Image (tube, rainbow, N blue to C red; front, side, top):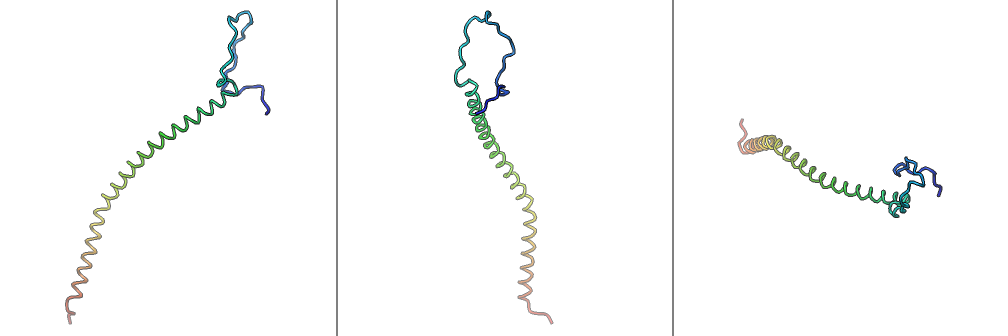
Length: 109
């Protein structure tokens, strides 16, 4: 694997010069999960977990909101369809009754 000399942008860099005589204690090594190699893995796992949790929440909210929106849409269409449907039924019944009466009446000469 080819490693570059510059760390990734999310790794903090030293901006202050520390002289050896000014150190009070020897620095302890970073825990493995926060080492430069482990940080990338931890970051990727954390990002995946966050994405998964956000997607679960989005799914729940989206499902609820879509159900509400579709319910309103169906109700609206049903209410607007009612009068038109009544008119069509009335027209069909009138035509059917007219045809039935016309067939029952003797032909006029």
